[in-house]
Length: 54
Image (tube, rainbow, N blue to C red; front, side, top):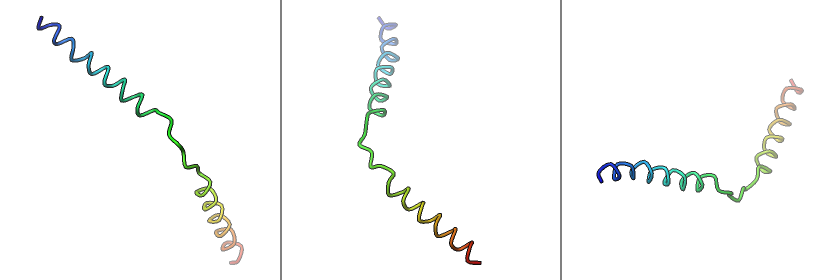
């Protein structure tokens, strides 16, 4: 009977890992990268202007 108890520990750990994995990989509502990409484009334009001015 003690051997069955020891086998339950990895079984419960595997079930817990599966539940955590499904929770971690769930679909989330993405905010999108639009504002970040627009900011990077503005940064690149500003850097190109500063190099062409000098």
